[in-house]
Structures are given as C-alpha cells and as structure tokens.
Image (cartoon, one colour):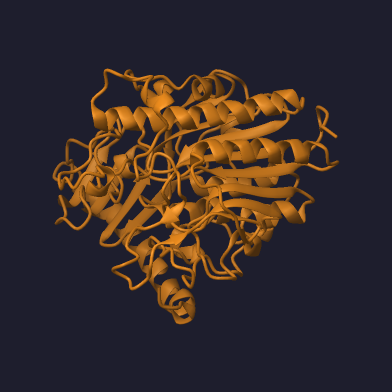
Length: 450
C-alpha cells in the first residue's frame, strides 16, 4: 500500500550521463526547455555549486553509491565492459546495501558501469531487483555494446538484463524503456508495506547520439549536434516527468526525496559525431564553465543538480553552497533513520544545508584524475596539472581561481597568492598521497586484468 505522510521517506536518484552544467533550462539553457526538471527544481532546491567526485563515468558512479572518494571506493578509472571485467569491490557497501539493511526495497533501472563479472553486478551491491545494462554505453535501439571491444580482443555483445537474466527489447528506445520499467517498479513498490529506493541512471545523453524522430521534430531549427543533444535530454525530461507523475498517482510524492544530477561534464569525444569526423563534438555545454569530461576544471566536475522532498525541503530554493555526489549516501541514510557512522564514508549529510539553510558541511573538497589533482576550499579552487582535453599537455601546471569572482576559471591568480597556493597545494598533494598509498596497499593487489 502507498506510504502515508510522516512515514519513512522513499528515495529516487536520477543520474544522467555526460550532461553539462548548462544543459537544463533551469540552469541557463535557452535553446530548449526541460519543463519536468524545471518543475522539480521549483518544488525544492536547485544547486549551483554541486560536484561530481570525478570527471568520468565509473569513478563518479562509485562515489555516488558508496559515499566515498573514488580512490577510497576502489574505482579510479573508466571500467571495461566485457563479461569478465571486474569492478566495484564486493566488500564496499553501497547506499543500496545500507538502505536494504534498514528495511528498504532497493531497485535499479539503467546504466551500471561498475563491473560486469559475477560479484561486481547490482545484485552483489545491495539491489533487490534491477533492469538495465552493465557496460559503459550501448546502442539505444539494439542495446549492443560496441565501444573498444575489437581493440581489446572482445566481440561486440548484447547488454540488457533483468535481474541477472539477459532480456531482449530490440528496437525499443532505451530512455523510454527505462522510464517504463521505473514506473512499473514504483507501482510494485507502492503495493508493499515498506519504503523504497530507486536508482535510475540514464545513459543519455552519452554517445551514441540517438533519439526518436518525435524528439528531433521538436527542434527543427537547431544545428545537428545541438539538435540531437536537445532531443536526448528532452527524452530524459519526459522520463523524469513520467516517474514524478506515478509518484503523484500513488499518493507518495510528498514523502519521496528525489535527487537529480549528472555523472560528469559534457563529452567532446569525436565518437559522438557518428559520421567519421575527427573534430571535437560541440553538442553539450558546461555553460560559463571551463572544461568538460576528463577535466578537473569546473566544466568537468560541476554538475546540474536538484533535490526535492516536499515534506522536508522548502520549495523555490537556489543553493550556492558546495556539495558533492558522495554526500547523498549519508544524507539519504540519515533521513531513513540509519547511522552513517557505521560506514566508512567521505561524504557528509547535506540535509541541514538543503532543508535548514545551513552552510556546506565541507571545509575542503578534493579530486584526482590521472595526472590532475584539485582542491576547493571556500571559494578558492586550485588545479594541479589541469587538462582541457584528454591526453593533452596540462593547460597550467598550477592554476588558482577565485570561484566567487571567476566561476569560469579564466584568470590564474597563482602569482598574486603564492602563500595560499602553497597551502592548498600541500593539502591537495597530501590527500593525493593518501589515495595512492591506499590504492597500492589495498585495491591494486586484488585487482584483476581488464
């Protein structure tokens, strides 16, 4: 039966894939509209300084689900997608693990990308039921995983599953399919006398750039690269709308905490084009931010983000305090009545910030990606070895920005603030050294070849 007001809350996480900071109309997009997500923002809090914990897929997802920095969760790089690929260590608890221990029904519909081999799959990480795919990307209609397989000595393979069993929905657009499965999951959960957690990680707008003609027809005047991006995000927006409508239909919307964000900044990878072109893809945008996927400048890690819980979170908020994906684990678990201190977490409860107007619980936030390391302290952001394009030489070995005055990190203040640069650099390098030491001692010895 549907939960009544005042009971333990339900939780939903919507996660998009490679969606830039500027690609929602409530975040500043002017060439297309996202009315359902705009409405979700109006019903609660929209964040203007929310972060992913990594500029690429697998590590960012690991942080979101484990409440840890990627290096502390055992996932620091994009994971392989063949069927013997290992992933998130089975002994690292997830939000699903923790909420299931509190009596929640836990479900996933969408992209996993945290391991394919048995032991690394959603059922091994706390999910009671799941539908979706395990690799990093699939064709939206055939649900076949192609990327990099031939180079790694593996053939392309079909990658769509329901509770560990391969299923076939050839010709069905995946965003629509995930929405339908999510709605059905909510209907089933609402009939049970227990709260639920639904994790809905879309693969859109990650390549391949596919969208039904009915969505393309909404944007006849946009350039081709922007048109397909607008169409794919509009499909996600409609999917979010369908899920929210089902919550209303089941009379559980007020007591459901809904969170929306993206995993990392927009992709400029040439493979987005699908036509052999070798120039960077320009369909997604990080708005005024510098950088994109793979980069530790703001465009790679600052995300669109929304949290709505009508019973607890005041509507119409715009929150400029920093938060990060790893904060969702302790925030949701605390709201469910659980104890985050029982878990080894780096994230912090942000509900006082969202529901009570408190300041961010973070003094410092850190990131690392290959040669890059970054720290944010207050409004100061230091990037070491920062890159704008994967594989390119660092743009600046040391880049200091005052994000309050320069959110686009256009001006390097390292010469004006040498003492602060040294202070932040010392903290960032010490944190990175800890990540490297744990990686060498704990995670690397038990990793298997990918």
